[in-house]
Length: 477
Image 1 (cartoon, rainbow, N blue to C red):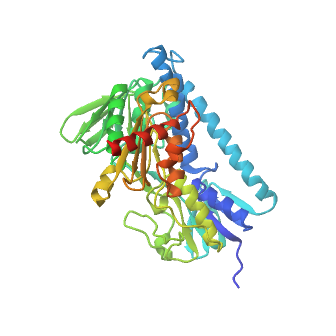
Image 2 (image 1 turned 120 degrees about the vertical axis):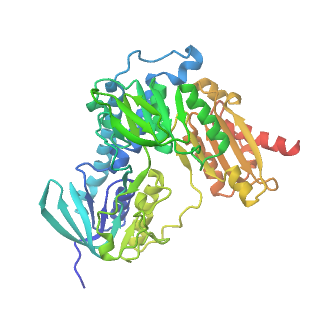
Image 3 (image 1 turned 90 degrees about the vertical axis):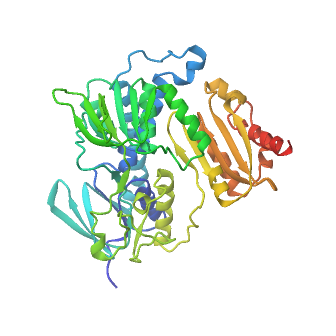
């Protein structure tokens, strides 16, 4: 029998990788993590989900957005907001999360159950072999043998090589957090290239901060996976904050303006030019799998580099598994966590349940939107009959208390039987509220749950009851 250094070796320590490693340790396995950075957590922790959502919260607080309904549209918690004001919160949250992750691993280190190879680049040499070399000293390397390998190397920003990202004036979506170190002052104007989830989130956040934001999109589509009524309301709210949507346009050239220390120009394909203090290129992400040597060992991938897996997260090589962004949609931190847990369980021979066909999705724009289940367009396309109930935030007392009268919660349900088909929310706390709908849908519940149960008053959860009663009235009327 071939001796192995480890039972499970995980490449990457983002949501999928870290969770996979912890799950494997919990199941008694001897585990290794190979991570390119010195710090665990991957992009999600260092320049993605956690810092971007923390930055958003800092902007909401410092600009006093939740209080403007009471004290006027010019109200702000701090008059002159600096880059340091914004990023101090980000640093503290990230540092706390890093400490928590290290504490989680310490017990396994003490038990000699896990080794972490920090600052190492990994290539897969065979079904049970990984070659890891130190990025700062490529001559220093080690070959690690593992019974099972889990690939969770994540993703990185995708942009054309002709875009001169310098992290001073022109940024990609991961380098936004170098703003604090590269710039002296907040940008007064910003161009965001790409109106996907990342572009929409940064565009709305910086507009609320007071930047003049231009959001460029190559067609007239915007967050097409979401309920159209929510997206329409989101566009109007973003325009209220000062976002200019430049539809049906794309860049021909992005450049740093000559003679300018902090200024950029975007030339559009139709000849128009836009100028701003900064540009964020948010034209999507690509998986970080092409440098792992997968083709050489027979791991099947798509033309875009996504790793093909079966329902057990197993690749075409039975001893190699993959989870997270590297396997494609939905590529969310939440789903990556779950995929990592399941991949480790399956790799060690334990049943972990099936993948959910429906899961909650959130977009942390301002205002945020959240959804689970079918949209009206999807139901119409499938010929599935449905009824609808709506609660506006103006009807929800707690929404008035917290200062957001602009939101909306929509329930889609079967006309006969009342089974919940979809929940769609826009407004403050949408990403928290969606879990109530998720719980009811997971048990094949009906809107009677919302009608027959008591919700604390005043709470945002009351919106479900209001929407359910509205839906019943619509059916009766």
